Image 1 (tube, rainbow over the protein chains, first blue to last red):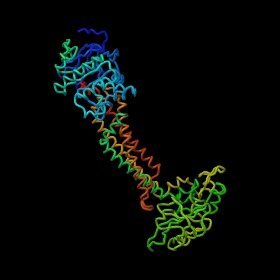
Image 2 (cartoon, rainbow over the protein chains, first blue to last red):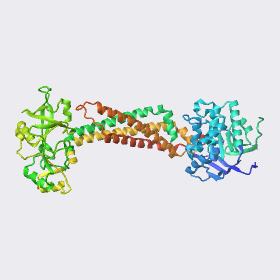
Image 3 (cartoon, rainbow over the protein chains, first blue to last red):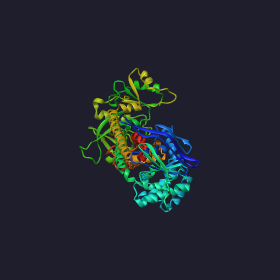
Image 4 (cartoon, each protein chain N blue to C red):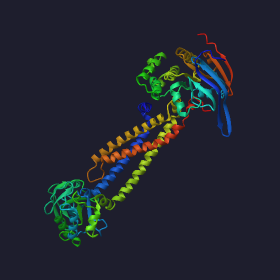
Length: 238
Length: 370
């Protein structure tokens, strides 16, 4: 399905990814083409083992494709070395992990500042950005709390703030609601959509939960390493 | 780096075990080192106190003061090479001594030295007949200025007129008098070993710019009648010193290896525990180098804390040990060396975690490894 926006956050062509398991070659992705617009929210849906996480990992520079091209925010990362991919992830991509994975001994604010400390070390500018994000995410009064002192939804918001610290071209959400109940999961995905749309950020949400698809602009289904369906999604009535 | 520091601040309990073990290792290292230094000092003080750079023995003595005899003619040959005022005879005799206040059978082993060239801490002119300076360790034996000590079976009497520090010899306290006093006591107590006037056991030689004195030059001038050693060589030739050093160095070496193993094991375990966290941090863009520096920083801080506790404990130990009991001294050099060994052990121990850090797959953070 053609993307109507003129700017493209992600462009993947002919992506193939194989893994060697003992003497066998396992094909995780087989000739995948995918494009995501600069402020588009895409839901990547498929059963376990379908290749959606592998596709997300390649888009985020965590894995290199066996063949094919990957362009993220104008950067062609297809042939990047491991070191170059590390730099790329630090500067151009944000991740929100399935189990949130906040650093347990850092406060909410410090969890955001980790991105600045492992990256450009802008000092005051980084601190100001962290404070701004916390304010926008409704966590200004929780800045000094440890993750254990935050609710599940608050931790998820801290994770979103961390993903946005480096002003990425693309934010990748890996099963953001898998550990949450229905109501909280709904709130989180609503929050994701609001934050991404308000900032004009592109996002890929990897999920096997069909309920989430209401919040995406487009749904892509992947089965056995191939895209089987692409379609627009109507936003929920809110 | 900040991440590593914050973990230390916020989760100190994680590092308590390693800190305690490393503190015990630091204490052991510093105690062994201090004991070695104390034993060596108590054996070598008399030679280290010499202000000359060379010690001349007779060539038949096998570098042992007790077996050495140097005749006046040989002494003159050495003096001709070294220049006027740069040589002095040295003699010694080891005897049991009776000190006032001790029982009749409670003999204190003492070495009486007769000198010409004043060692460190002694006056230029040797004391008068039957007068001596005593090593400070004898204060623990209730010796004070004016105390009359009876030496040997002949109970030769010598009077203490002052003290000198760090002048022990082969683990025994020393008395320092003139060559005449030494010859007199030797004749009274060891008549079979008595020496004629002018005969000494060794010659202390000072090197000055005007005379290019070398051991080879001295021995050549005496026609091979002497063996000349530097002070360090003479110290190493003392019976037991080199062996003591070797044994303790081996024990210290094993202790350092244990420190490496402790650090390696502890931080390898911590790294395994942190695999998921490292995966997330790498996914966020942290390099393996950054993560490894964090591990190293934590290891160094834990090691330095352990070292600081070890240093304080060593200094307290050195202060409270009664003089003359355990030969333990805590020198700045030894303490610094021990800290350096521990720091090196920490760095090497951490290196075992480097491979593990390198192998952490950031894709695992998102479950994208397969």
